[in-house]
Length: 276
Picture 1: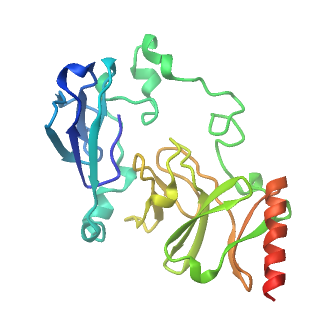
Picture 2 (picture 1 turned 60 degrees about the vertical axis):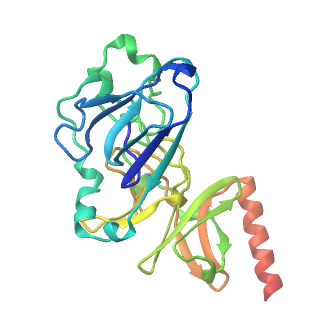
Picture 3 (picture 1 turned 90 degrees about the horizontal axis):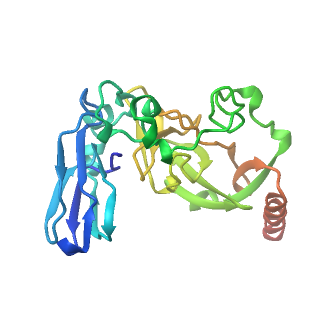
């Protein structure tokens, strides 16, 4: 169960009807509505049929019993609508509500109370978090603070690109780390590129200003918003952020020291020396 990061979704069935069993598409409510976790309709795919729905409609494929199903899915976005106040208010993930729920509408990746509402026999997909794992209650990563952030002494500044090479966003490789760099309203931001929720690339997401004046990047996978300044999301997921600056050498990002980062920093210094 999830919502799409788009305005309108087109889902076209490609497989023959007898090629599989199961895998219906269940619909619940709009994510900002009180009934967004209440089941409303289950759609059976047919070859050549297209189901059209709002991207912010909570939905998900049910288990497939046998065979294989293929679909062509088209996501559409309206840039003009996304510039309106109405969109900023409706799309704010702070509207994500809990409330009453039907089991079919719950997802262990989206609903914090999944374990409480779904019968234990159906928890086989869930992995109990280690007490030491980031984000677990009581773990070092569950409540980020300045004291836990690495000091600049433990970071290496690495040149990632020239200032004029960054327009809106850019995916860069720093050692073995992929970092998404954003320029928004004259400010620079840097976050881990892979979404901490399901691994989608944040460099492909839209940067938006929410009604509470926060600037966020909306994950293109499931629409979770991450604050560009803090990396926090309204769903509890935390995205690592990095200091970023502009120098004579270009745009630089400070990341924790590793062998790969040390080599990248040395390469960027050597490149700058050659240009000088």
